[in-house]
Image 1 (cartoon, rainbow, N blue to C red):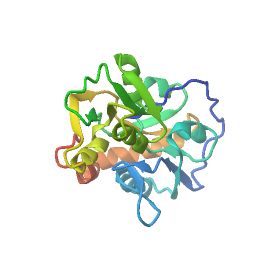
Image 2: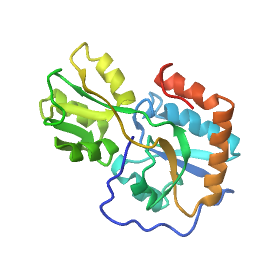
Image 3: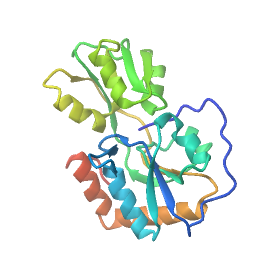
Length: 240
């Protein structure tokens, strides 16, 4: 999933969240079906559903906060919210500056879509969202990387001829391809990258991490998490 390219060192806050206070769940709100803003203006999607359930099981009072993706880790470090639950892959690079719970979604496929089946993704101009594992993979592949702040902009870049293909989470691209009326096609095959999706936290918030880890474990054990995965990603989705 998404991998922030860390170009500057980030200083971790020494003070952790008090679990007597409201825990603020930070998300992007622009990456369906993981997270999005619904017609009522509320955070919705797979991560809203499981995040609310985790807070219930951990006996936490939680609220939801949105952030642009390119500032989502700095805003956590600055104390603007207490968790990142936004389709964020667990990576060694990120673990240098923040901590993670265990994964709540197994590693899933990334994929390319284009307007022509003849696009060679190793030589093409490929659009990807800034700070994602997909952007990092394109940069290392030999293709020309074109980065955008939002996932919608990556798709628009292909539609307007600025890029040849989009590289993103396949779960994000499937409905775009299906709703394109045959204009978009998958090219290049599925690509396995990432270590699964976890909740990001400040390194100082060890008590909060432990509570969320226990809640994720219980959701895996009783099948609740797998049910939510199939609801939002389909019956063929990878589960625990």
